[in-house]
Length: 91
Ligand SMILES: [Zn+2]
View 1 (spheres, rainbow, N blue to C red):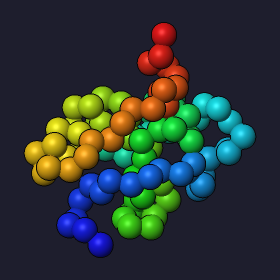
View 2: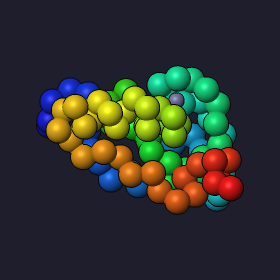
View 3: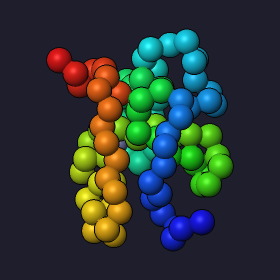
View 4: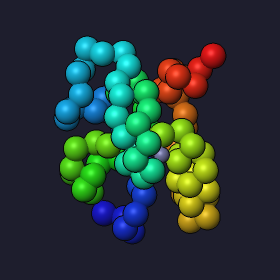
């Protein structure tokens, strides 16, 4: 167990509450609660409640604007944004 808060992790396909066959899912961001489209197998997600709750998706603005800066501040590796993780953003 590391310090409380955001942990670096692999994020295997989210296995709770989502249609595993779907390439795109819609759901509320864990942080800002905005509903956004994402690929359940690629989206940045976080178990909520930690450490072993269902994996909740986190939207790109929160990763880029909130999570990664905080991780950088703590000297932790930032979350990569995987290709197609946020289909609506990929033009
Ligand atoms: Zn968000």
